[in-house]
Length: 438
Ligand SMILES: *Cc1c(COP(=O)(O)O)cnc(C)c1O
Image (cartoon, rainbow, N blue to C red; front, top):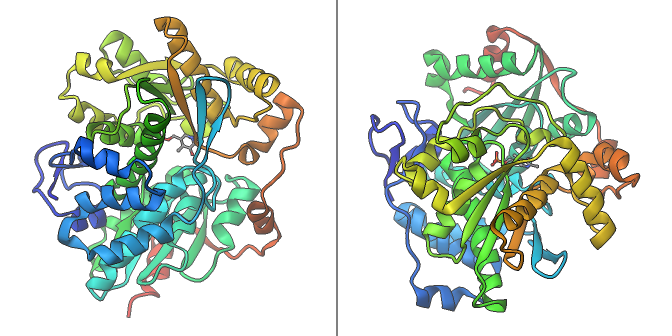
């Protein structure tokens, strides 16, 4: 498969190139030259397939001959060694729980696949790849856990000292092995600036192969289409004649973009609901036709506090920059913190189910869509992007419930932090990184 840049002024590249480069040289995002289409027969044949097999069938079409298929199947099985359950809440609503991976959030789906794919490409070239990431919390932990123990890779994570939560810090600093945590005496912007400088430093790059692992990497997007395909086929097997709505709690819109990929591949999804908190650039675009991103607003659903979503350019590309096409597949709703808490309360009271604040935004948006369209019976799936224990305090002060913390999260709190404190100075980062070069 060939990949092009959304800015259209960079060379077309292979998957391997797109994955190792991350952002295209013209600062655009990589897109596949076409979205592979599954025939009716293929969909029927896959309707009972386990998750890993469906994932393999999709991944194969993007990877083609760039990786041995046995190898690809192996890395997929290794990436998805956890459940992806659909839980019923009410007659025509299900929640797709995407939080059963190691960091209790859906970002594990993208990060684990990306890590293993990069590891496989690195091994093929007999090289060691250094992944450099700046994080303000959650992305860093998904990436750290994703790459942990993956041969031919090492991860260096820069995080702002004193500015991440205790759990997040532990997740970043207790893995060891090929995961190195640098505690930077500065804020998140300082961390990002240091990472940028490293990518721009030719001398450093002559010693080390540096790759970024941020959310715009195409190898994080492709695997996020797997669970849409999986849920859509399950839905069709149970309700062959009922069109499916999928509501997606969104921040940078990588998740929703992957959903549109799955739909264009032929997996039966009738319509998407783009659910945002007060950071509503995309719902506003859908309502007014004007994309005018605002400064980021802080909300309860912190992982969706994104004023200017990075994957919007991919969606524009898919819909040929045509508002009508965009609207044909996606309706947007913005949900405030009061509604978010009220929905957590309602769903707990009615279904005895604890929503985290991000999933709650998705749940409420689905309800609003049904009301707006009078499609009260329409079947809907809400993607649950995080385990409620990750937002322990919000759940406690909204529902008065102390959520059980899964063992894997509890264990991390007892481990010893191992981070190297560095000054907010590029030379400090550079000398750390050069210690890997031989
Ligand atoms: C990252 C994240 C989101 C937003 O996903 P995007 O792909 O950026 O739209 C939603 N919920 C949680 C819990 C997240 O970590």
